[in-house]
Amino acid sequence: MKIAIAGGHGQIALRLSRLLTDRGHEVVSLVRNPDHTADVEATGATAAVCDLETATADDLAAHLTGADAVVFAAGAGPGSGPERKDTVDRGGAVLLADAAEIAGARRYVLVSSMGAGSEPPAGTDETFVAYLDAKTAAEEDLRARDLDWTVLRPGGLTDDAGADRVRLQPSVPQGEIPRDDVALVLTHLLEEPRTAGLVLELVGGDWPADAAVADLVRTHGTGNAGA
Image (cartoon, rainbow, N blue to C red; front, side):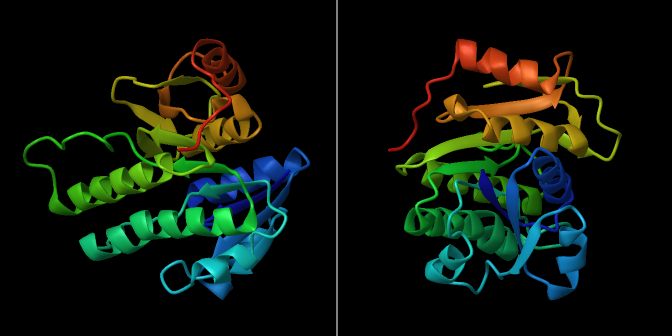
């Protein structure tokens, strides 16, 4: 497959692009900063410079030519305020969906967050509320489209070494997950089209990633998304 990753210099995206290229996929990673292209290319991916906050859908679609799938792994990042949570975490995801439709890339995997789609607990930090609101809006936009979408909501992200032991279901208790294992699960989701139409939560657990995805297909997979 040819797969385009938005937010290509992110910690999950760099791990994902290396996994995908090692498995023989062609990867185009979109980065905002030209200085980040070398890091992306070191994973085996092709780097493309495109700022999701200023590009048009047609601009972005030009980088998706021939892509079978897209992944939204971008984020405004730590230290950003509510305004950029909206322009990147929501606006960037919507822009990627617009571009995917133009380019004919039907498969779309959105990296969201546990807590999206739910009311934040009282006392939650204002910036984190804005982040969850942006992720919720991105999910709602995607779910209304005629695309083969999958939404992945990881728990708290860590830099621990991946153990390839996960818990992946439509709903799981709060928990943490190494970025290594998030990237591994994303790889298997991209390679399994029957996970289209699913909103999934992910934390550390007892199942290897491939087995967890296979179990989802048996119990919840439809192979169909869209509006």
